[in-house]
Structures are given as C-alpha cells and as structure tokens.
Length: 210
Image: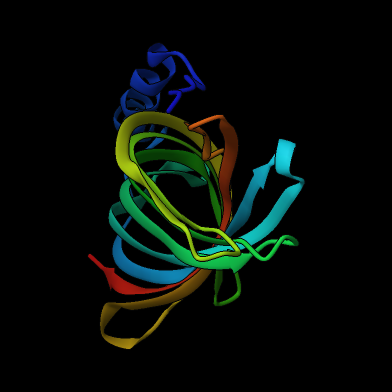
C-alpha cells in the first residue's frame, strides 16, 4: 500500500490557526453551530491492467464540533468525517471483487457564509488528516478465493464544499451540503495495482445554534 502525501504539513497547521485568528481580527463572532450529518459517498475502483473501472458508493457520517461565522461573513470550524465503502461487484471475466474501504478524518474549514432571507448559504475550503483502512477479497470465476491483508495508513486531504441550511425554532438547525475531496488510495496486492477514489459526499444534517 502506498501512502501518497497530498499537501505539506505546514498547510495543515495553517488552517486551524486561521480558524482561531481570523474571526477575532475581523469582528466579533456572531454565530455558533454544531451538527450531526449522514449521507452517501461516491467514487471509483480501478485496475488498469485488468480493464476494471467500477463506480463505487458508500455511506458517510459527520460530526461538526463547531461552525462559526465572524465578521464580514467569514466562517471557520472543525469536524470529523467517517466514510465507509463496503461493496462487491463482478467484472467482465465473472470474477467477484469485495472491497472494504474506510476513511476517518478530522478537518478544519475556512470560508464564507451569507444569509438570503431565511436561507443560509456557505462555501468552504478545508484541509484535514486521517486514517484509511483497506482490504479486498477476490473470488475467481472457478470459485478460488483470495483474501488480501487489511492495511492502514495515514493520509492528508484537501477539499471544498457548498452548503445550505435553515435555522428553525428553539435553536435547531437543518441543512444539506455537498463536498468534493481528493481522497485517493493507491493499493498494491500481488502483481495488481489498484486505485480507490472516494471524492464526493452528499450529506444532510441536523444540529443546534448556540
């Protein structure tokens, strides 16, 4: 399993620093929110030498510890994302592939939020660090089974997301968002090289304003 470094650690340190400093510099923090979300993820599993290019999907959970808007509409926050893809498919040669992929990441975000009438709209850039678990089972067309060892590695990622939400009565928050992330895993087992991407997540969430 190869661990591809996507960004330098200095960038990961900069984003949390900005999430603390910017709201204080540009104006008093006016809004705090926290929420829980659930949704679906989508991506691809490919093996170039075996001409496999399969769409894969999974489920994702998210806990945003805090999302705050300061002066000039600048928003910052911290969150945790847990995405699981547990799927199987049959290729053109009638071989069965069982894929298990799990990514747990913490991230910091920086962006803008505006309010149009009753609707809040936000766009963010984010950066994070997490751990990916990957395993695969291969069952050939003549029912020979091969299970490859489960492996874990650390990963960095960046992404962007757009969101809309409503503030309801009694300080409840209800919304949805779509994120695009550069989660990519280069896997190697036996003489096979594979690439797993999990780069889009659509989430609905509910939380509180405090």
